[in-house]
Length: 439
Image (tube, rainbow, N blue to C red):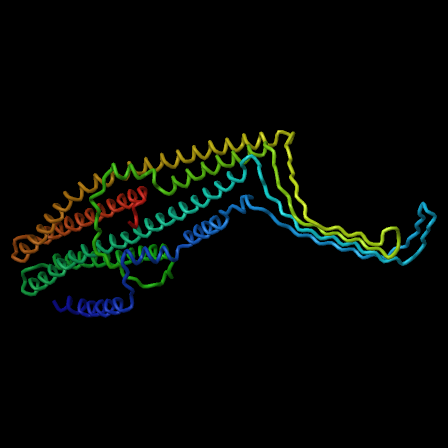
């Protein structure tokens, strides 16, 4: 008994001090706080949002070429030349160093009247690119939430293993204390004392190993939160709560609403509009031109000393494509091929989601059933452990009986915990596919 107290009391005091320091130093974090932090810090989401911002700015009728363009020009030349001029009336001029100036200014506005519908197709394509960017942001958000939830509940799972170990260790301590008391009065032998110490030491080592696993799981969570890996955190949840209300019909109906599939649909529309743009190049282009011109020519000598023109102008320009080396035809063919490729890519995404959902649903529904039966086993193992501990105290059970009951209790606790986490993984996957995470 003295040996046990000699080592356990200082150890318990150290653990108590360490635990108090940890509680004070560590930051408690809930699942909602973890998700909020990840959504704020995740770089993939920020990149997706930047792409959305760029496509939102680009979604403008002027970018598509549907607004007039106005250009201004100004040109002036000053020159000094020699002049040798003879006119029909007999007048002749022969001078050097003649200064002359030529100035031209204009403001021109061009408005496209017709180009085969290419402007409207381009504008709609820009709208689809904006929609696609929004769906890519939604995809990134769903991926981040799913990743954080998996890492968060992985920490909870590992902490639950500790709870099971601690309960079993408490029994081992009681067992060792009772054997020491019996040994002091000659009712127990050295072999039982040594075996009880070995069992307690093995469980204590398992506890320390489990704490290392917990820290590794926390490091994974911190990486998902984009926080310093040395940040001290404490996960608040102590149990893995399962949502048992999921329905396969609802999941299957919402697969088509997944942002990745909607993004693929937007890509199909983009390629269809590219087809229209390529096909529009076969048609004439008609532009309306208007503006104002000013011209001034002045010379120090010669037949014309000053010539000045100014005034507005209005005109229509039409260009008709006749032959371009079959380039337009080939562009249309390539655009159609790209559209078909986009359709196939969407089908691949939809099939992958369908297969993943089906497998996750099987894991989800079957694991829920296994959890109910394992809960009964865990309750039975807990009762058995308490019974064997009582019988051992009364001298009606051996140390081996208690050890076997402990192993049954620990194994059942591990199985129940693993089943809960497996069901949670399937639940998160199903909600992610159905775009229901964070709702």
